[in-house]
Image (cartoon, rainbow, N blue to C red; front, side, top):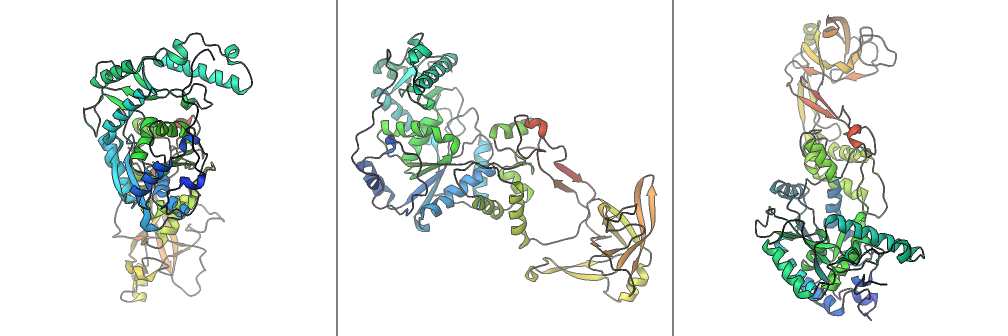
Length: 556
């Protein structure tokens, strides 16, 4: 080619086989987390030996969320994988398992202390105990020194190209790659108009000048957006993520954790793998959309001669009737479609917690879903089923009516006398299946309340609860409730005048309804439905919000 578009496309010479890549003291007994191999990922025997000595048989994963929003149920799946399931797949004994909780906090524009605190609370709520908690920002000085090392090796340079120029450069490189991959001449299909665009006017800047400019960036001598530090990678790669990615940019924004000491910040791709290596991570687990970041991940560690963890990508969790994109979740909050990140309709951990989901429910669901590379959408009913099965064993039952109708029993005194002292008080198990959860007493009173859904004014052969012409059974009492008169205020039903039928020849009811005595506790009940009307919200997701996602019963 007319221009030097790539650098170091050859790989380091290695004679060691795949068998010698594993540390001698490794505890993992399975290759379940092996994925696409890259030659840059091969560690030297020296790096493997050093890693084995430091880790001493420990197998370490990490969970590295960015504090730019609240964690959601997709993150819960990732936590379950990194804290538990990965070790199960690898066959690692409990005593050799370690997981680092890391704040991937390299973007101060989107991060806040509120998010930092919420991530910690959610991890604690789900019961995961990290080996330690770290911050990518704690490595800012080390990351800076490693960037300088790359400059000195001729593998990084300061670039003053504008965003538009970089986009044009990327587009041109992609078109030239596409031409090569289809057997065409890139100089004919996508000719280079100027070396200022490709490979770029700054790519061959001398090391000394790059060091000077990068130091000036660090000292705050240049405007935001005027310069970046880029890695000298490969414009002829089939992977666009190798097109000289940006490692550092200028941002005059104080950092929520590191403070005001920095005005240049490393980007995700540069930081991620280095922090993994510094923290002695064995398995770097992420979702499939990061699969194409595998090349820059290993290239950076290879260029710095640092230990390369194994990388495994799994499918992200897709759940019906909700969205798990942080951008969309933030828009739901900022657009006041919900009442904050902890709204019970939100798929966030804090929203699920507020709705009543326990850590056992969430972790069991994530474990049942598992971790594979197959893309799929999980039915919301699976989450509901886990909730029902989990809560069934521990939840105490109580009767409630959401939209109450007052019922006055005309023959109450007579029935109470027949029942005798205490005959209208019933001992009810707190759990219908587990007597060990104890019991509580419920007293039938002259005035009770039933739910409006348990009464119908007109006869309906398919309706088995109370109507003026059809009696219904009363839960726990055993007798029938018979409606004698309906008291209305306009169209609104205000009261039912009824009597109890405990005669031996009474008709056998087809249903028994719940009720609340006159001294029942008044409360507000909120009933939640799906947040969206469509199982898989589309790009027009804001139009698919469910207007009935929350029903508030003020007088339950």
